[in-house]
Image (tube, rainbow over all chains, first blue to last red; front, top):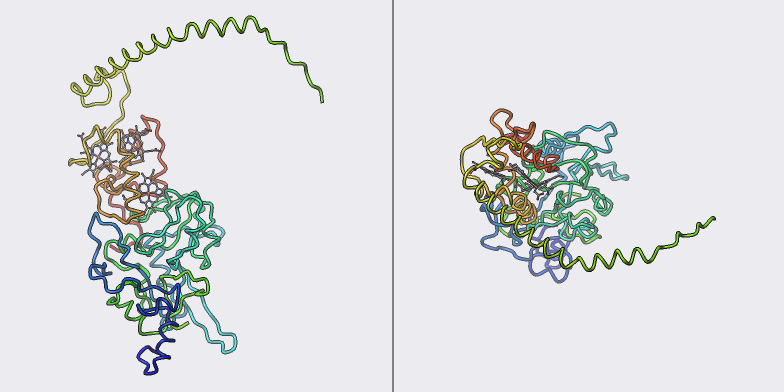
Length: 256
Length: 164
């Protein structure tokens, strides 16, 4: 179903189902008010770096669109790219304790046996439960929608790990060395996908997006109606994982 | 349970002592104040002397240990050296919040910028030995940092696998 559909009622359903309420749909679908400030002329573009000295703009909302149909079975390129970019390389005796900023999950339809792969990471929710539960204010959402852990404030209580429905956060169990200077990380703090904030601020794309050989991931400003990602979301049905929780994630999936 | 009887307080002696203290208090207070202002005066005078005569942290006589401060790269620090000595921790704290929470990048007081400029020519790092910039002075002042459990202390460090 697409929004080019002639039937107006169908078109409406498609738009609501995609989770992309264009300006008119905000009222009907609460929690889906993604397009609050569409077409802001000076909203940043994924292609240019923010000016040095300027703060992240609330007019922008960074997000990802992941096409699960394109995600190749067995491919781990995004995971490897993420983990080398961010220096997530420790190998602990108990592999369950290794940090995991991004992982791949497989969905199998039991009746048909059809399987779908998709990368899963911090969904950069507009209403992040990790931020709600944090006792110190370390878990935070930046003005441009990127959810981060301020590891200067984090005490490692791991409440946010419990609260996250996407299991997107990890705790660092061992002392670390050889960190990427742009991605400081160390023992005793919780961490997770930062949407490669250090790259995004330079005008680059997140490492996972850049690495995907299938082009299954796209990154951009969801609030900017003229951005490729917003256009895509407006034209194809997309899904929010656990939409029932109404967290309004910034990561959208296609084909699941 | 056995409860021991408390020893009897010897009221008289204690009270006399306390009275003596209250009488002496105003006098002592005054003399303390005088002393303090004298000390302050001398400290100020000494500080003025020290700053004007010698750029080092202690007298040239060599009787006091001094931190080894190795300025590896010429150039201008973020602020004058006197201010840096006193306030660099505050600067870093504010910078940290500006960068992480507000997303402001490319500012002068960035920790990575300090490291790029202050890393030793020999080891390429601000840590490692007491000849290295951040460590030497902190060892001298008995300050322990945890910043480098996460932050990379080497200048120009390229972590394995990171694309430019």
